[in-house]
Each structure stands twice: as C-alpha cells, then as structure tokens.
Image 1 (tube, rainbow, N blue to C red):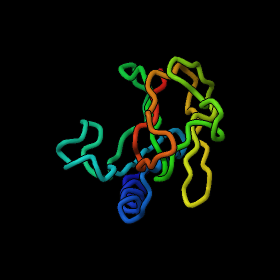
Image 2: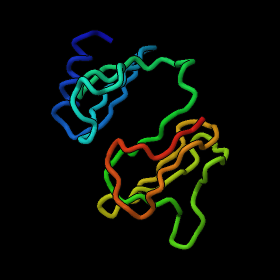
Image 3: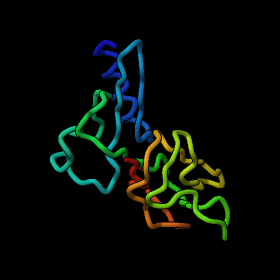
Image 4: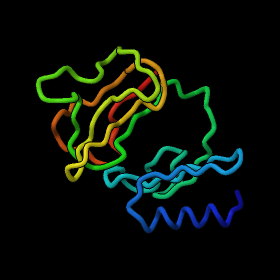
Amino acid sequence: MDLSKIKTLIDFVGRSNIAELTVTEKDVTVRIFRASPGQGAAGEFPQKAGSPASLVPDAPSSIDKTHAVKAPVFGVLHRAPAPGEPPFVAIGDEVEEGQTLFIIEAMKVFNKIAAPRAGRITHLIEIDGGEIETGELLAEIA
C-alpha cells in the first residue's frame, strides 16, 4: 500500500464519525483509529497511538497476552440475550472466535459483539443495561 493511499484513509477517518478502520491490501494491513472523546490530549496516549487518527501496523506481538474487546458503537450495553436470562459470558469463561459476548442497542438496532479470537475472559465491564461510549473497553480475552 502506498503512502498516498494511507494519507487518504487517515483524512477519511479524520472527517468521518468512524472510530476505527482496518484495510488490508495484498499482505499489508493498516489500522487507523480515532481516540475516544475521554482519552485526553495527544501526548497522553500510549506510544502506539500518538494522535487522534494514528497509523498502527497490524503485526502480532508477543508482548500482548490479552486482547481488548472495545465498543464499536455508542449505545446501551446488554450482557444477556434477554432480561432475566444469564449473561452471554462471565469472567473465567472460555470463548470461541465469533461467539457472542454482548449486544449493543443503538437506535433500536441490536448489534451483536463477537469474540475476535478464542481464549479466556479475564475482564468484563460491569455495566448492564446502561450506556457505553464508542471505544470503551468491554472485555479482555487472554
């Protein structure tokens, strides 16, 4: 992927309401994401996210042992499929890639949030039936 395409994608994310964009061309993957409103100034981000729209190579890291599951949209978080039913997952549960972890209700649309990979749930958000922001940490999978 050439630099002009990457700059165009960064500009697109900067002008839109998109929180994260992942593009793969041939064997190169580029992830561009916008900081959520509560994250502070650019100098306060972790090293990988140096500005509101940052370019991060999507390479596996042996340092990261957990994978964060973040809210892709703003809405009302539901941890169970229906009121009165048990939650989709609990801390310590083993999950498979693609397994439903949550539902986020946004404008009367129910968005299923699936596990991006297999593993064990090590962290879960405590909110159930309340509002969550785009980019908010929902769970971690080890």
